[in-house]
Length: 416
Image (cartoon, rainbow, N blue to C red; front, side):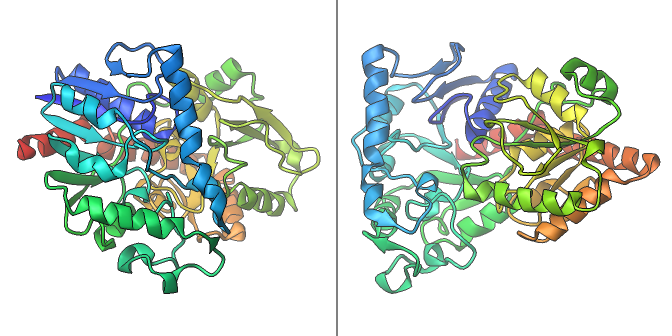
C-alpha cells in the first residue's frame, strides 16, 4: 500500500503537525508513505516539495500573497480566517505523476491546490478536514447563526455585517461545480462536531464521512514529575502555574485571547496574583493587563520534548478558543497529565470530559471560564491526582497515534 499525504506545510500549524505525526507512524508501521507539501521547514527526506529552489520558493510566496488580493474587496469579515483557491497550480499534476494508491489530502490552502481541479486527481482520495473550509465559501469557520453552508450561498442570506463582493458565495459555487465531478472521495473529520457540520452541508453530505481524531505519540507526550519539569524550565515550584499557548493567539479573534483576559481579571479580582504565574508559548509575549501578575513567555517551541516538559510543569492549561475543529494543544496537555479548561464547543468536547479530566465552560462565558480555573486550581491533592490520572488515561485509550493510524489504514483498505 502506497500512501501520499498532502498538506500545505510539514511542521507549522496544527493541521501540519497532525499530518506529519500520522505520516511518521505509517513509516514506523512499514507502510510506504510520502508527504507532499508546498512549504517544507524540516529536512525529512520522506517529505517532498517541488518548491525546492530559491526561485520556486519566491514564486510560491508570491502566489500565496496574490491569492489573497481579492479579499480587499470584501468587508466585515475575519480575513485572516479566509482562503481562496483560484490560481493555477502544479500540485495535482505532481500528485498524478507520483506512484501512490491513495492520495490523502489535509489542509491544502495558501494557493497549493486549485479546488476547481480537484476532480482531476486520478487516484482514490481521502480528505481529512481540519476546519470548515471544504464545505463553506472562503471561510475556515462560520458562526453558529450562519447557515449558508447548509442551504446554499444566496444574495438574500448573506450576513448583514458583510459588504462588498460576496466572495464567499463565489467560492461556494466554484466548489459546488467541482465537487459534482468528484467520485472516489472519502471525508474524515477529527471531531464529531465537525463531522456533523459536514453531514449537514450541501457540498459534502453525499460523500462518506467518518470521524477519526488526531493522534499523538503517547511515548513522547507523557507525564513528567512537576518539580523536575519546573526545575528544567526555571519555573518556581511554590507557585500555581496557568498555561496558555497558540500560534497568533492574540491576533486571531476565534482563539479567544480577549475572553481569556476578561476571565483572568475576574479570577484574580479577589486573589493574590503573587501565588500564580502565567506561562505562555506559541506567540509573542501577550499583555494580560493585570498588574503584578508574573508571566513567562517561551515563544515558539518546535520540538516535542520541550512542549512535553512545559505542559507537565503547569497545574492547568487554558484554551479559550470560541471553537476548534479538534484542539491539538488540548490533546498534548492531557497526554502530559495536565487538565484543561476550555469552552463547551466544537472539537473540545471530544477531548475534555467535564470535571473528570478538565472543565468545560459555558460557551464564551468568561465567568464560567474563571470558575473552571478556580475549580481546578483549588482541588485537594487527592482529587487533583485523580483528575490528572484521568487526563492521561483518556488519551491512552482513545488518541494514541498507533490506534489512529490503524483506523486510517482500515479506510484505505476498504477503498482499495
